[in-house]
Length: 263
Image 1 (cartoon, rainbow, N blue to C red):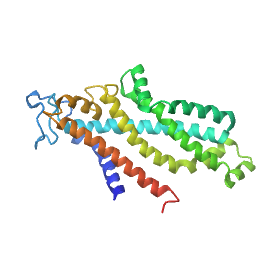
Image 2: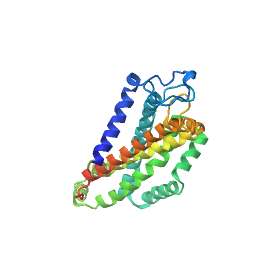
Image 3: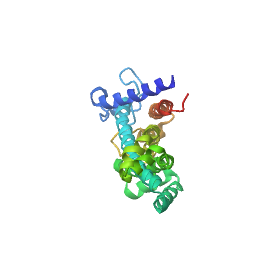
Image 4: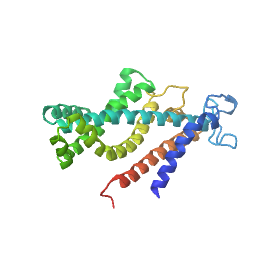
């Protein structure tokens, strides 16, 4: 049941994000005469403080969240898998140096390090992605390193070495593919974490800058109208919660499907 809910939420959000320019109300159109109006038939999610349609901004904001999540996960996974595979297979001083680097990054709370990086680089969407990649690749690296330490001792890997296969070939052809199921699950859960982090940074004014719609900036703008126009915070908050929940459900479903030990 939960996997169906998760897939429905994720696929539905992706379709809304893709079809947004054709189906969403204009998220930039201003009508100050209707500012802060609640939900109605014409505007199902209400109007914000500048007279813009909240539903249109939510749909366009979904594109921002999904693009940030996809960019962060793809780059973090690429870097993390590469570093973890090299560290686990090479061992010795290489593993020691890379392990200490991962320990240093893990010593800092992830969101605080991201805030510091974006504050230094300046608020922008690209800097948010860069900061989240800096803190995000470590989880993939540790996951892959632990698996490579076990996989490199298996018989088929030893056989490939005995046949004269170079280390890079052993990694690319025999070891890294065996880690992909776990990496896929980690990437799905990483999408949820990236969406929350992007919304948090945008909420603090360090992410997407107005007038570009973002769920985090919408939450920030709605704070001052929490009592007279609660729809400005309710709908973005529910959207973030649902999408994160959807990715978590999908991640659990993939883990059950890809784990050979699952019952």
